[in-house]
Length: 234
Image (tube, rainbow, N blue to C red):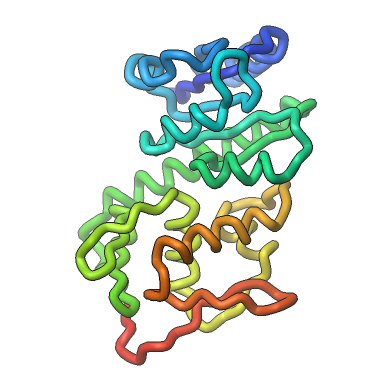
């Protein structure tokens, strides 16, 4: 059975092109043309992925993204803006990806397939929650399959990509990765975007884990999680 896709887009021409093309691919598609009552759509339509326009008439896409990010539904933002800061803001608020208008519908379909595939992989991992031990580093406890991070017993709320980056770096301690490598390895495909996306996520991650985990910036190269405690174990 194909997945449900919710399109939040107030440009009727664009929404209808998307709906026609995605329906042709076998997806079940619903269009919300103003972004209002999006929570009702999530609860009733149960989308597996959301395409979200940033520039809406009644409410901006950033506000919607912030509102629905906790539902753990992949969000791909659509934007006509060329300012990288706007794109990064969407990623900060919980979006998984962004596509710049005008777009090639083939790119949209590919991005959707990748995001949905990754969602299935995460779901399959979560089913195996009891098959692997948690990962410990310093005072941080990372439950890989429940995707929960705790520090001294208290949960740290991480966005999906923040969790993915932390888990990847912890599993690959003391190795330097460039920004391009992290985009490719963590996002799971060749991310078509600015490498400053990684900088933003690392900054937010550092703010949340504070000094519990040492993520070092390697000037001119990228990032490395440096192991500083001989008792760290995985």
